[in-house]
Image (tube, rainbow, N blue to C red; front, top):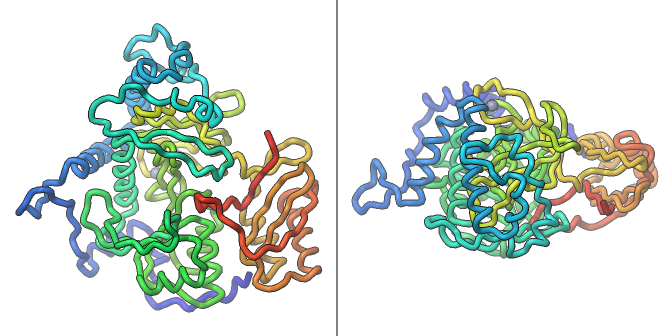
Length: 487
Ligand SMILES: [Zn+2]
């Protein structure tokens, strides 16, 4: 990977990257006027101020509340979460067969008495539980106003697809938190946004659509991630968006492609990532190669937005108005800041498939209070899926940092490296799948093998396999480190 050959930067872009967030905001105030973006109006003849339709009104009304609740002390937020959780528990106990016995540990608890201690008596919900429960996990009586429950499922990229139902309310919270995400990061709603993700039809050409919930925003266009890096870069050049939303693995490939081809996207102001773990080195790389910041969210199909990157720091704030998040150690106790543990999430508003204390199969590290002043709990980093861990012959699990593997070990040893994936099937062997732009020499491979041993562990034998491409699972998420060992 050649790191020196940085593409030429346009004058002015470098200036922007040296500015801190606050400064950028101040600059914009005095800068060229932007097109004003207002909410969509539902009343004939009324354009401004808009009187939005029901759903959009609800999105805006929720954000009005979020503006306040984000500054509340953690204790106040937790108390309100527990009050909401009580409503969810009562509903689940009454109308969802699966929870009849499961919520027995809370029998006798009066309204207003639920504490976190009592909450932790509810058993953890696993993927296997959800699969086994099937329809028993669906409410027999959805409250009025929650809309029609629709089927949804995870893609199965984790090897264990789960099926569940979503409602109008879960969609509403997703849209409202998406708007909060844009507000937090000071996005220009009149700008063009491009998404390279997964399309149901990879060759479909969609009409540009709004990208800011509840607003008549600039256009968003989408491209399927399966297109080649060259095609993606050419498409971005043509559309010239200000924002790009994509998977971290795809961003990595785009940056690499940009270095190789010299193609730059000067219109871009920010890259937002989703769906996969964002490694810190990718932020550094994106700044270095494109001169752009990367912003990330932590979400999951089953529960929506879990945490959004703080406007002032690279860590995340839990979206406590929508989900109750616990990070638990091996004893089921809350982790202290800095300690890694399993992420257990409760969607407080899905009354059709209540997911109560759902082990989402991720490992994260909670952080301490944030200097931005928000009372929303901090997740310092997300280490990844349980399946992203490699198991040493000793039985110990390790989450190798991607930049050690891809930059330090493979990148430096294999100049023709394009993509790589590590797959563990045996306790003492890792398969290293390599996509390279030209054949790798025996010497290079030997160097890479040695470097991998240093970066991960000498306890593994590394078997190199050369492939034309790394097939993405239907979700589009490339699991760059994959364990296929049974539990
Ligand atoms: Zn913060």
